[in-house]
Image (cartoon, rainbow, N blue to C red):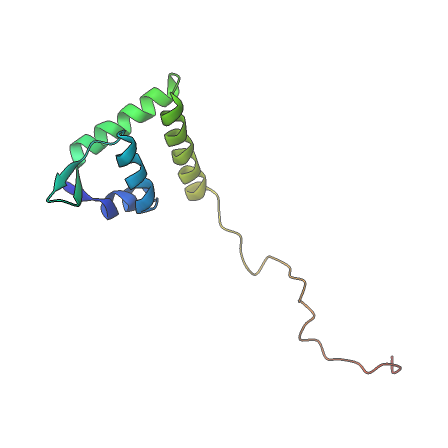
Length: 105
C-alpha cells in the first residue's frame, strides 16, 4: 500500500509540515512520483515506526529524541480527556444577570 503525505500525517496525527520536515532531514523513507509527488510504502513506514520505538528505548540520538517527544505529545493528546466546557467557570458567569440601579439595593 502506498501513502501520501496527507495519509501519513493523519496516521501519525500530525501536520503535513511535520512529515515534510522529516523527509528533508532524511530520516523518513520515501520515493518520488514525478517532480514533486512524495509517497511512502506502508511496509517501510511500519518498519520505521518499529525501529524508532525500539531505538527510543535504548538511547536515542538527537533526531530520534525529537521524534520520540513528538510521539509522546501525540500519546498525551490521545490519552488526556479534553476539558468539559460546562465544568469550566468563566469570569463572565454573571454577565447576563440583571443590572440593579445604583442606590436601590
